[in-house]
Image (cartoon, rainbow, N blue to C red):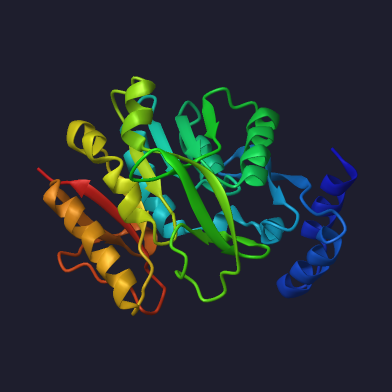
Length: 286
């Protein structure tokens, strides 16, 4: 472990309020911009490492997997356990929390993760190596409607809210050009013939990801774990409606995820204005 790793571990263990812990870590992180940090974690009997990058994902030092989207974890668990060696696509892997969760729920899972931020992709590569996950493949690219180059917009020091939509959040002040792939091209190039789950957490860029995955959805019909954020912006609403319409046309049904993984079918899809139930399990129903 590096000195920074030890500091992260110490701050996590400090008997202080969460807000004070976050403030303390940000002071430390400012002295190590762009550097990765790792700390040991245990969840569901699985031991390993998690972490983040100073100046890009400082809040990761407070990660508590027992409180991390528990409703979605409960909904996804039976989906993964229905496969002997589930293959998962993680679009928007960020600092790898869902990678850890999937590997804890299904240790033999194969994961193809997509994270366009160079610093975070490099961190994920290190995280995968340190955890000894041979079946996790990190791609330093975003998924979109066509291959080429894309642009990510974000607020300084807050890459967890980055989006390909320039005005998705009012605080966006920076941008970066990054490689862009389509899921269809990737799946065909990798000769993937079954997908247990596609997780999509891309802050308003869902439509483009799905447009670039049309052949994959039609051929393999995988279930999706997808976040849809509440918005009143007419342009964002139109994009969201097009996303929903595309999936419905492909034979998919939306189920909003509630407490303990309870699924409630939602034919008229409308994200929760209270931001309490934002994730959907979207699947084909026979």
